[in-house]
Length: 256
Image 1 (cartoon, one colour):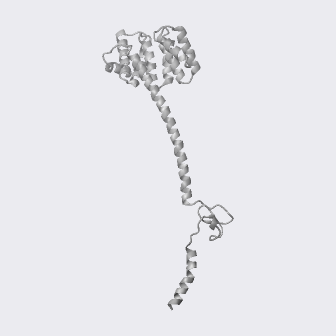
Image 2 (cartoon, rainbow, N blue to C red):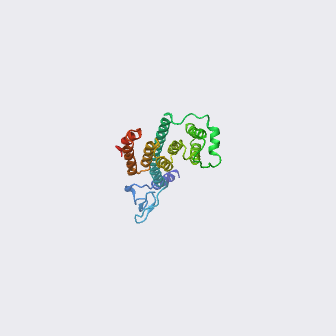
Image 3 (cartoon, one colour):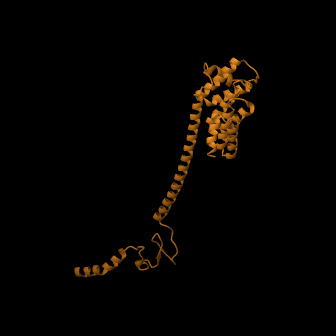
């Protein structure tokens, strides 16, 4: 009885062993156990047709796509960082230029901007061709002090109001120039250019005309108008040869 049982078990071992062998993707075993071609996922296909990707295959492709997207985003980020660095550098240059001009002593000390600011930034100013020289001085100095305090938004309103109220004041040329500087520091190139141009147009004999023209040329350069910038700088050199603006224009002309 025991001997018969052992014989039966022995005869059944090859079948069990064969059943336990897994079907793989190896070329030497294709067709041996699966009876046909296999796809990438190990599933048998008929006529060699491609089978759907396995979960691992799909994950691999997704990872590749993610890597490509990350690489693209990294490139965009680097470009934006470079542009931001340039903008910060330009703003720093504007502040440094403004600081240097402030330290030149343009504009006298005012008693304080509070009272004058209320007068300037309050109700709409009434245009006056001639006014009280002392009041004009007070309002101009108060506007100028707002620049020193870095309150540029209020300074713009103050200078605008001053120019509307006292367009013929002895301080009007300076006010128009500093209005352009405030717009320039604020990054509003279009408004800055208009303000600088008005200095030369409205106050052609003012001592701020050379600086205003140079600043106007710099604005045109920043806007990408190289030809306009070159023309204005040549005008500064020709008409105001002994000024610091002419010296700066000559230096910039070599770079254009």
